[in-house]
Length: 188
View 1 (cartoon, one colour):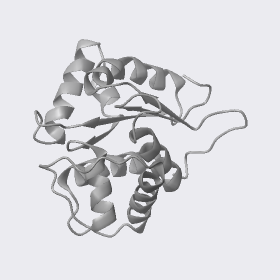
View 2 (cartoon, rainbow, N blue to C red):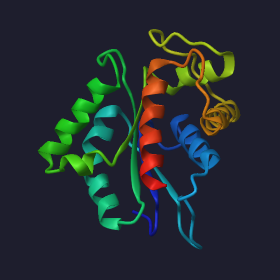
View 3 (cartoon, rainbow, N blue to C red):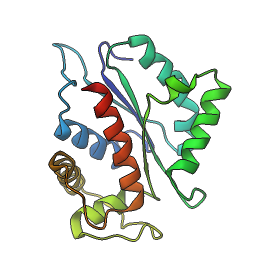
View 4 (spheres, one colour):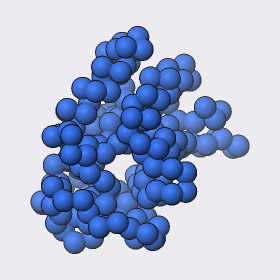
C-alpha cells in the first residue's frame, strides 16, 4: 500500500481499460470528504483494478488487513458488479463475508468496508445520472469517453452532497449510497 493512503478502492476492470477507475476517482475526489486530506508526497486515494469480480473477492481480505494495519482513517472500498447471479447487494455482500471469514477476518473488521455494488455495470448508474432513468435488468450502454463518465460521477457527488432524496434512484445505487453514508457517519 502506498504510504499514507486513506482510501483503497478495489474495483473490477483492467488498468486503463475500464470506466470504473475514472468513475471512482472522480466521485471520491468530488465528494471530498473532510477526513480525506493528502499529505505532501502521498496518495489519499489508491484505486486497484483487479480484473473480474472473483479477483476482487479474493484480494479483499489482504487489502482489508493492510488498511487495518495502517490505522487511522484508512478505509477499504470494494466496487463490484452484481451481474445476473446476484439479486441484490446483500446477496453479494454474503459472498464477501464468507471469503473474509475463511481468511480469519472478524465481523467488526469486515463491517469497516464500504461496499459499492452496481447492478450489471456502472453504466446503468451513469445512464440514470444522464437521463433520469435506467432499467437495471438490462445492461446500460457501454461508454468509451472518460469525460462523460467523470461528469456523471461529479453529478452523483453533487446529489450526495445535496442530501435530498433522489427520485427514481436505481436500487443498487441506493444500496451503495447507504454504505457510503455509514462510512461518513463513522468518520465525522
